Image (cartoon, rainbow, N blue to C red; front, top):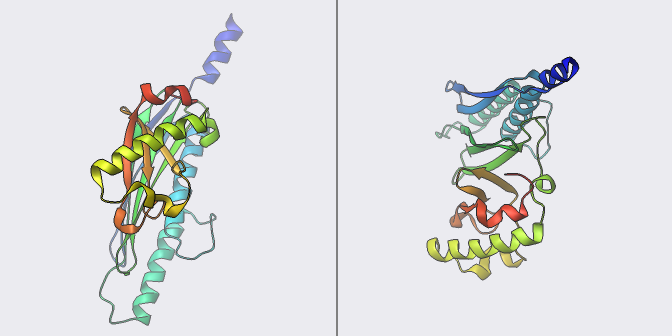
Length: 231
């Protein structure tokens, strides 16, 4: 009995989230606000590393992927590139912006869902917004992918396709047949959860033109729980 108590204590997980903010405006305008995990060190560290690697990558303007930069290094590099741009184009008046916001949208014994929204404006015709959900196993800190979230991709796809059609018909002028750029239906690259159910979110250019905007809606758990691995 004593040994069982020791083992159960070792497996106990403590995990909380606090807001972490970074603001800079001397050069480019940078404002970050995202949840940072605290508690059981191994789990919290893994979650924070994944989130901060993603945020750091949002500052990378080159086509090459560089995951070695720390968040502070990524911010410094973004400022350096902005200052170089201003020196090369002294008539440019628009200040670059990097605005990143995140929050925990859902917590259960099976999944923690966190959304990170990025707005980046480097002086083009318009800024770009990208939203991504991260779903973690709360007991291990493991990042859950589509295979570990969805038990029946075909069944879920059928539900989402029907709900997407209703959403588009109710809120947009874009006909259903013009979505996905003439290709077959596919699930979004990012799935999330909130108290209302499963969040379906398609970023700009994922299924339609920039003008279409971000397409986002929720499907109640009772409609999709038979197709999910977690709840």
